[in-house]
Length: 302
Image (cartoon, rainbow, N blue to C red; front, side, top):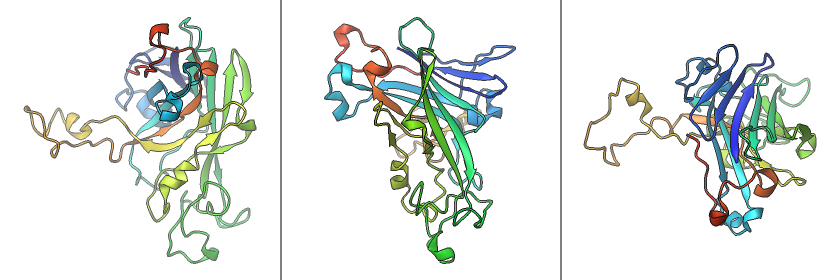
């Protein structure tokens, strides 16, 4: 199996990351190669289209590993918009309505990742408090238990939709389309799904983990599950020290556990345009040889 993710804008600019390589290819007048986590100068100017990492692996949860090899599910994850600080309001971080986020899959090993494509398209909507004709707000998320006005509508965001979501005054929804051998099929009945908003804090989101769980959607027809929203970055590094011209906190010997500092994970979170999870046999050919087919393995992304 060969997988890559791509993002494109209506003008035709295409930016791709190969899951089995380390290159970021910009398709345009002049092709160029670069890495991703904000160090590629051109794509750093367009962070919502900056694909930082692509992951493809057989899901390793106990229930999935208990299935027969041809029934096991694969997971694909695309991270974009790197280096986020959750407290960076008021606009926070979102997908771009003008970008098509795609997961491209080569299902016959011919080196062309076009057999199956999963496309995510986003739409941003402003939602007046109390419904149409209600109060509008320049701040996308409003919630605090001390706000008793407006019938208590703004005492904390607990839902992505319906009662409890009134404080989501700016919200993103998205659709997912499967393109198989050129034929497009809208998933989830073509309905709009809600992207999980950036975590603005405990007053606005009293239980952010529970809210994020609501952002996992399952398609009854295909068995595919998706999620779109803000997640913690898995790239571990003392980024501030490294880019202060290798001003490491201590040279050899290595740091002890108490001295070790990760300046990416605590606040540098990414938005994931996935995971997309589906039965492996319906989505991609196994990357394992017949002798090792019983041992699912993750595909390298770098």
